[in-house]
Length: 201
Image (cartoon, helix red, strand yellow):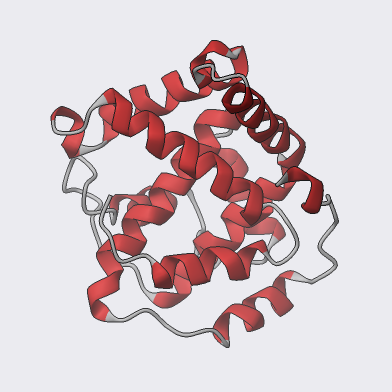
């Protein structure tokens, strides 16, 4: 997988990426809950692998000229609270198409910034699979899996209904997904993955 995924800087401007996304299909009403969940979980994977927080996300929004849609921590928190499996009701709101596109661009921008780490983690995952060893036996993957599982259980309502094994599989799937989102055209890949996603996590 890694051999065909060369690191390349995306020469597209934030505006051209926005236009690019606007040409792709919009989600239908039935898909929205899945999309809100997946966007938040992809951000969760990115957070727990790289250690970034809301400041990095807001900085990315500013760099991408999206500060009007994601102006501050409260706005970002409310967007993420639109995930229907999140604990708490206070910030929950509907997520519109423009807000979803904004989160897609922020995710892919940050994934690109941390592409080297993401590639290293996925390479480790492949190595562990080849050796028939558990992923958590590699320090980088073990730390990521632990952080993802712990943060998921802190934030999501389903913490008592989902096993550690399922959470680990989800964390590793999202890790591989992040590699694709970190490459040129990642914003298209993520948007189309959101549209295609029909199963609720």
